[in-house]
Length: 358
Image (cartoon, rainbow, N blue to C red):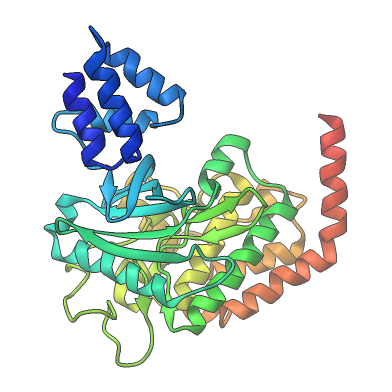
């Protein structure tokens, strides 16, 4: 690529302050020869641009790096509907996360409605254990919304990297998630996609729930989206992640309510403590059938140190029928808080002993 074109792309995306752009142009104009690779390396080393930005600028065609007032710094995650990026606002050093609906999904009315529903649901909610919505907009008909940036990792990656969690850590994660979901449910919303990858563990040890893309208003007389009357689930379509999906959600997504979230949280607890989802199969259909028909797996079979009270709570949350589960998330929360009060000090001592052994 010609260095002049590279410089022009930096200017178009407002990646550098105007004086820095002018200095860069002057340096390029006065040099006899400019090596693009050397130039990009200097810009990254000096902190002017990120490797991700360099990659996007040098593509053909280049990838957009500015959405409204937000400049993309790095990709955090990629999903079927779009991607999430680490961004900063122009003239502001504070970091945010920006979710963009992919152009393919923009052409899918159901996917776009799910995205807009997520934006609307998130904008209604504010809780210490939810990732807060900050802003939203559209760039050339491509919608996006801005969230808090949470340094840390999701619980799926934490377990993959470090193995099953200590009992005390897992119960703390469940308490934080239960607090957030109780608040969400009180506001008439069911999350419908509770799973380890949607629970962020920040650097302070707090869990924050993300992704309301499948959230559904559960108040009387509300349609499935809470935004429009367009059907958001095609006949026969399964929305959600089957490893953590309640039996009733697999049959009819529209009927999934707060009790489905309780089931999914129970599946998440099983993963945190064992490193595996509770039910298995070679195909998606086999997993769905296992949720409906297989016996509820025992946590104590995998972790003998699990207290009987935690085993009972897990079995209660994973009951096949919604009416056999805890009545609400407040009941689940009380169960986890009682566990922490009863066993907390013993678990802390166990962690200290384990560290000394290592």
